[in-house]
Length: 219
Image (cartoon, rainbow, N blue to C red; front, top):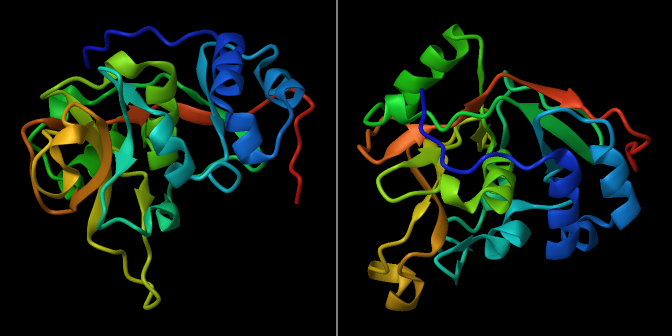
């Protein structure tokens, strides 16, 4: 069982948090629409579709020790990392994700090794957007040496093959291209699908469900 320090706020409180951060403006939604999405929801994470609120726009809203989040410079295509074909995401501007786990027990596994174990347990790997939303609500989930990958998101090349990069969320050491000023900042980055890292688990959930409120697709 993963150790998680921060309890997930109620969906109503999550909606207020997103409004306070201005996520509704990023997504082109009204505060009332986000509040409606949370109305009547149970214990779950409220996620705004990355088609409306892309990860590149939300990453700077993350905080760790007062430092704002960022996307690594060599991931300019971060918003192209969409859900895997076997990771169904509900349609619409927002949806809910139930029973989040950080996946510490799979630290030092590769993404290629972790995915079958997650699915065999009847769970689904978190997408990058879902991981970012989790940290917007529960910053303490991200800890040094207990960070996580979000292998529910992958980038598909024009050939149809999967890009070998798998996205992850961790804490910058302020070295290299990150810059000293970003030490302790939350970081959106990537790792190779076949590589292992002792400090990265694999975040997952039990399931995703559509919101029950009146919020509907704007297509």
